Image (tube, rainbow, N blue to C red; front, side):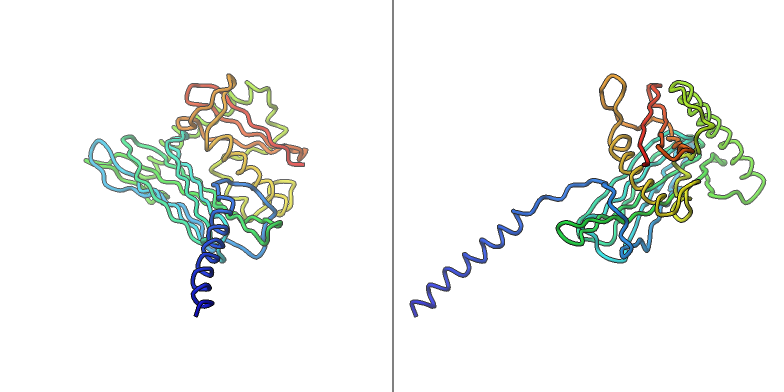
Length: 288
């Protein structure tokens, strides 16, 4: 009887100690996009970005912005980041992460009041731990464009024009957006003395096209590695805040959509954009 009483006291204490050692001794998970070699066994079965027009009045409207993704297997860390641009200027961001899950869903309502080309681009990330010493990654990208314009006593929208009126709106908003970006990127190249002939240029919003096709001069495996490292750099040096020439760090909201320049000699890539206050920013990453 005494032995049974002794075990009744000692065993619960023993298991409680194990519980606290396991849960409080683990290194806390931190949100962070770190590129590891691609895991061929973990893939994204879903990766979507969607922007739709919600309610509107004659003066303003609301955009419904949704980002979701799913992997075929649970990952140690799942994280999705997304950026929303209006006529080439960053207006909002979304960021969500969870541990030991397959799916992520996030949404945001974004107010607007002017005709605009809304462009959203997202990076979907998974960190996989095969064991304590072997880490791998899975990644995907998605994007969505939406044209929003004033029509009568409210606003209307479309993704692809279906008639002459919508084609006219598309032309108007494209002319408002792309020349502005070209002028901004040209100014940045001139400021940093960059010879554009030595690079293949890709706007950030066009990067998802290289998810399943290689960058010029690279294999698909090389492309996947370059894109993974690029997004790691963009997350740390653009999405979370931009370091100015004076050393201060500022929010990227109000900055222009970045242009990515891939050097034709395959040694490096360059990211160029302009901050809200007009300062040009250059980020460089080596690809060898």
